[in-house]
Each structure stands twice: as C-alpha cells, then as structure tokens.
Length: 419
Image (cartoon, rainbow, N blue to C red; front, side, top):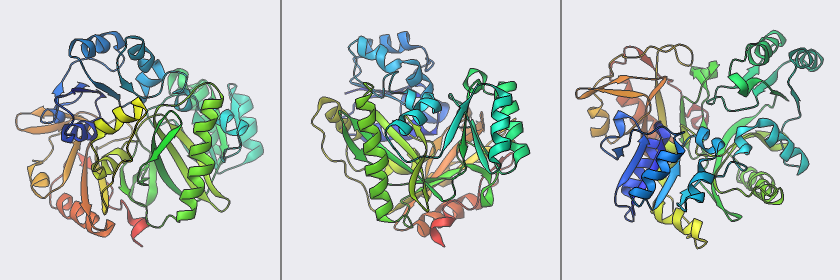
C-alpha cells in the first residue's frame, strides 16, 4: 500500500523512515514535509490544515493509510473528515483529541474517573488566578488550556514567576485563544517519563518507555522547550511503577474515554511522573511525542503499516521491539525557544550517517548539498547501542567532533539513567 504522513517535523521524519522500511508499503508521501525528508518520501506541498485537499490527494493516489503526526489537525477534526470520505486514517477524532486539545477536559476526566494526577483549578479571570497562586504559594505549575506547541507550561519556582505567567497567558494572550483559560496545578516532584501506546477498540499496545528533556540547557536549566533530546528505555524506572501506570492511568483513561462516548483511536501519550505516592499524570497527548518518537520507532522490528492496518481492522498482532537502547540529541538554533536565528549553515551531516547515526530533520532547508537552519529545533541525531552508555558515547563522540556555529545542544541527555 502507499502511505501518507501528515506533518513536517522530526517526529514525522521518523514516521516516514519507518514506513519506508515496511515491506507492506509501496510509496511514502509526506505533506508538507521538509527538505531533509526528500530521500525517504515524496514531498507534497499541502498544509496540515488543508483537510479537503489532503483527502482529495489520498483518494486520487489510492492511499492505503494516512498517519497524522501533529496535534493541530487532530484537534481540528482531520480524522473525522477522512473517515467521512471513506479513507483509512490512524488517529483520534476531534472529540477524542480533546484529551490533548484541552487541559481542562483532561483534568476533569481524570478527576471523574479517579485517575492519578496533580490537584488543580481552572481560571479564565487573571485576578482570580493570581489570588489562587498567592494562596497556594510556589512552586506551582501554570498551563495554557489549549494547544501551544509544547511551550504552554510554566513550572514556576517563585510566586512572582507564577503571577507573571498568568499575566502573559490570560492578560497578554501569549498563546492566543489557547491561553484564554489556564489550568493551575500543584507542583509534583519526582522522575518524569513518557509512556506511549497504540490504541484502538479498547486494545492497548504499549511502546518502550522513554524520557524527554524539556529544559533548554544542561542540568535541566533554562526555559521549557518542545524537547531537547530523549532516550529509551528508562532502566532505573521500577517495573512495579510501570505496571501501576499502565493499569491506573493508561487502561483507566482508555476505559474512561469509552464511557464518555469519545472512544480513543491513535497514539495515547501519557506524560507521567513517579512521585512518592506512585505514578501520576502530568499531561496527555493524542499523538506521538517529539523527540521521543525518534528514539522509539527505530526500535520497532514489526512492519508499522501492517500492524496499524491490522489494529484498525480488529486483528492486530503484538508488535516486536529490538533489544538495546537508543539516545537522541536535538540540535537547536541559537535563541531557541525564543527568537531563533534562521539561515545558519549546518556542518556536513554525511559523517554522522557514515558513523551509523540516524539524522532526523525538523527545521532545515536545503542549500545545495548542505542544509541551513529553518526553525527552532533543527535536527535530532540518534544513536543505538547495547546500553545507554554505548549509545551516548556514539552520539556525543560524533557531535563533539563537529563545528555547530549558530546552533547548540545539551551535553547531558540520558545522564540521569547512567549514574
């Protein structure tokens, strides 16, 4: 079958490459893609929100499966649009995508069904929100209710920082309508991890655990970003905690969505934290995480397209995963996650690939046989090894031998797991 991937980032590049390796797949298309995906797929110049044109393309090309990468089209109802046209697509419909599209929806669902999460309150009035913060004190967490490209969360360590976040979000509409309402949560202390699963018809197929690094700089300092790197598995995570998370959070959420009349199909991403009281939910996403996808999908031994079609058709086979470890480091443009410098030329990336590393493009633009930065997170470089130590050594030996003028990366991805 031919496959269409919707999106343009590093996550979508990992999906494109995985589909291209699938024996059941003929041709892979990506819309709108980016220049770095040209060797793995045919790039189609259609935006992720052009539902009508995307569906027409899928119909005209007899696409056997469409996979949606980013959250915006899912929240906008692209799955509903494709299904109405009789096209096979993998992802949650608009109602189920609220699990990510509205923090308030997710928190209310968890409260109703006793799914472990932080205590919270929801506000649309800035003064009421600030009064609550003064009452609760810091540290405290302020979240834009709607989609904010992974940047709508402020973990405020001081009261002043929290008050400023409320002014930015509700008063200044920093994230537009997405921050007209905010969710304010208690601060949870513990080890964070990402738990992603394939879900359809109440069936749940977990993926290997991973851990993202959100802060921009080493030692978890600097502002929150969309993610500066990830690794998988997470060896220091107790098996009992994973079991509890699966039963009390993932399974419970899938059942809750069914009970609410909004059954979930797609990638259920549970952003979790292991506290003294057990695993709790920080957030849900309705799609693959980025950069976790780039270290998890390459571990999949099974044919991704065949597995997804089987899952949608009600006869899935258990997916098989490689043993070993993967570690990925994001190369970001100077200034990220604020005003980024675009147009800086990347070094020649061929030596990375020659060293056996995977390079996933996110924000790049072709300049002859080289690439220039064209966004905040530019590429992710991923290495595999029998252990995280081996994967880390491979990645950093290669990266540290090159000049990255105009770019930066964290030098401590995975350190917490290698103590």
